[in-house]
Image (cartoon, rainbow, N blue to C red):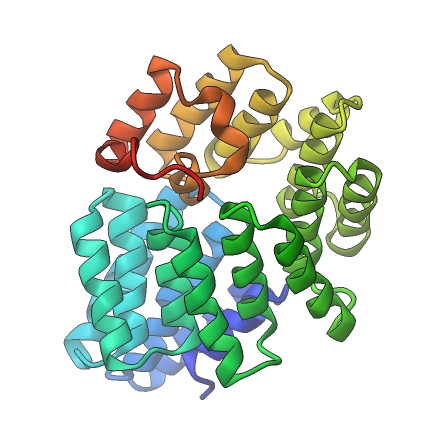
Amino acid sequence: MRKPWVIAHRVASGHAPENTMAAFERAVAIDPRNAAAYTGIAQCCLGQISESGLPALDYLPKAAAAARRALELDEGDAEAHAAMGHIAAILHYDWTEAEWHYRRGLELNPTPYVRMAYIMLYLLPHGRAAEGAELAARILEDDPLHLIGRVVRAAALMFAQEVDAAAECCLRVLEIDGAFVKAIQTLSLIRGYQARFDESVRLAERLVDIVGRAYASLYPLAIAHAVARNAAAAALQELEDLPDSARGCPSGIGMIYATQGEIEPAFTWLERAVEEHEPTLLWIGTMPRTAGLRQHPRFQALLEKMNLNSCSASCKPE
């Protein structure tokens, strides 16, 4: 059986998480004491949320049950600890428990999955983007061809507002695999920060060609148009019309409204995202594009609901 982090890499590269989940479920049916298979189930559930934009509350309970079972069978499973860190952060907004699980995973076996989990759902929400970029660099020291690790480094650099270095990370990935979805998606967002608006839009349109008209493509397309002050309404409406968009991608919709300067609908969608436990909302306190919202009382209320208010003063983008 493949190691779970290899499956997580395949999911992030565009492979269907439901297919890999079925393989892990067959493994559990054959051997109910297969801890690695339970870890794989947890990771695939989390992939359905983060990569497919499906409602978090539909998948987090199954992910939690699988990760707990994996740890019952093998407390030394580093990636099960990382999955539990995700669940503590996303489902419970419990940062003490999340940090404990992430650090335990790093202590046991700092695989790429464990490192990336800690970067994306602990360091970035807490304004520690430079530290995240440094940790991602260690993944690349071990494996220079680890493409999703390079994209995670790009994301950390983007949060640290080192946008030129972030773009170079994505371009390096695309030299190796020109259709690597996460690199195209991230580079589209970065080009918007660089005021290279036409390129941002072209990259987002390329995503539509690769993955179809889905959350992974429509969100960057609408953001690219909004940043460029083009007509984002069509892509935004299409995003809102996706099945379960109100539960699966409310923070993305809220961010598009915020980018357009429409504060009331922005907060309506962002507040819905808190209730739906959408994971991308965890970055809102340190995401460069939220600077215009941070002084609003409703923004501080959002942080409080996610237990991120204690770092709201210190967790500014670096």
